[in-house]
Image (cartoon, rainbow, N blue to C red; front, side):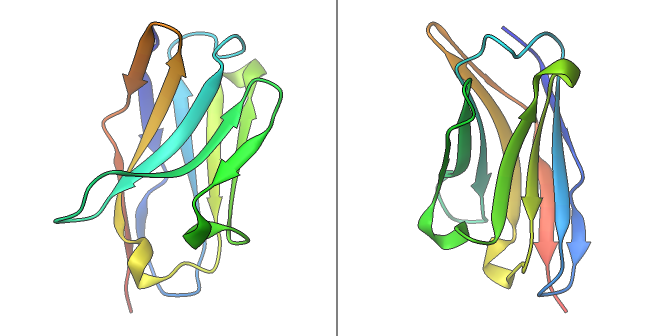
Length: 115
């Protein structure tokens, strides 16, 4: 398993951008799926985006065209570029690594979109 540490969250105005980073304690090159999830107050955790080893991506409909997930295997880091942010994007964002028998989560980074 790997330890994951998220960073890059903060307070941003509607329409603004943030870039989240997820640093892994070990190599992620062999990990099949890296992803970002989010959980808003009073709501269940939901998938935001995933990226697999060959770079194929998947997004929840509400962020398509606004968010982009990427992975830098050389730096053991996964990114989530978030553009045109909306108040409904406000949540605690978690990084996830999933492959076979393990499923690792970070502690989360808070994103707040408000004027």
